[in-house]
Length: 86
Image 1 (cartoon, rainbow, N blue to C red):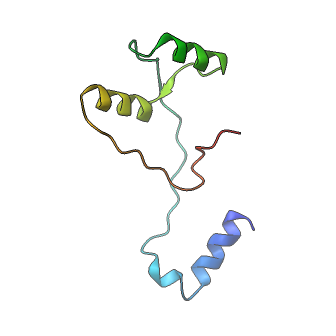
Image 2 (tube, rainbow, N blue to C red):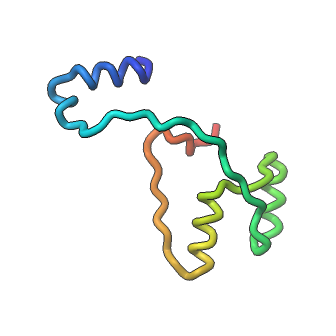
């Protein structure tokens, strides 16, 4: 079942639709990249470069900065968010 078909089904389903407060689509936006942090171990940088990864996403740099500041960030991502590498 396609995603659009599943969403249509949920919108029409009397046991689901009333429980949804808002249906909205967030437009795609371009990714923001940053250079690897200077403190990143060279072996990690090299391994990333070998996989053709040339930088980190802005949210990855934000988490890195939080850890460097002594904070303990919690990272949460939804199902089917693209976190699985194949």
